[in-house]
Length: 112
Image (cartoon, rainbow, N blue to C red; front, side, top):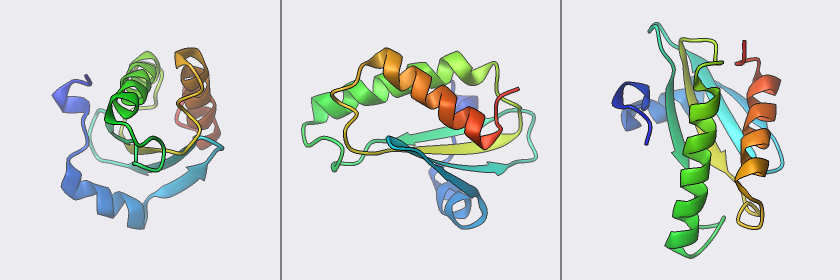
């Protein structure tokens, strides 16, 4: 679980969609926007289209949260970030998801 200070409040997600930048990869869509805080805030979602079974969606969400924790210290601070998963992730493992998150964060220019 991400620390409470690193979680993006749900009322800011529509603002992030409207004003933020969007980066796509095969398995993720990343929305991000500069904020005026000294830390980055994150929101993650795994829609039903990715996997119908809740247990498998929860596994993907746990893998995604752990991947974000790995890169959290390497992120340029002051960003609000929303990661939307796409179908096909359940057949991949944690290491694939971790590297894919690193690739999309680097593509967005969020890594130091």
